[in-house]
Image (tube, rainbow over all chains, first blue to last red; front, side, top):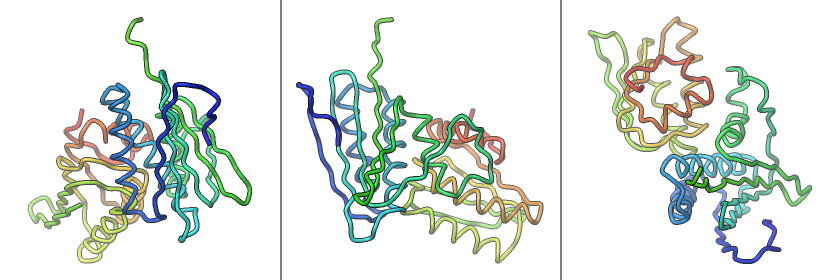
Length: 143
Length: 105
């Protein structure tokens, strides 16, 4: 869960069945939220790809009859997205160069999220499952 | 997602047009169609990515498993005219060095 200690934050929640066809719904919703917050086209694309990878990874590891819960925290300067499922998530060390043999074992998605988002956390909640939490900051135009 | 496959005798390759999105929902079908084509005739593959709007790790994974298959027979996969947002993912994962990319700078 995203920390609700701060004021002036808008929350949006989405819960999807553990089915591949709903990932595109999450992608479109995320795109709309990020666009409304003022992210540019490339950043929106990065966020869209990352949320889809988080859902895909969670979906592959979760139980069939359980929903996947997605929570968006819309802050003034950042977007925090949390994806929760019942299964585990593979962690990958991003400092290592990606080898072709490593790919196709579920690690590619997490590698992509780590590359595109500013902060990524995978939280193991034991029997409750795993959460992927990621943050993208809105860049200040004035340098 | 829509896929058109034609065997081009002149190029001696399968020419695959892919229209739409390649994600967790559509990738298994995409992989199946490519493997079926290779069963019919083992040859090089040319993918026209002009109308491909989106790809994720499962789409890349499908392409990698098909590549592993064609490599056994010393064949290649060429991916043409992909959009910048898709090229970015190939660059990020170093897959731009594994596939032959054309017309997408």
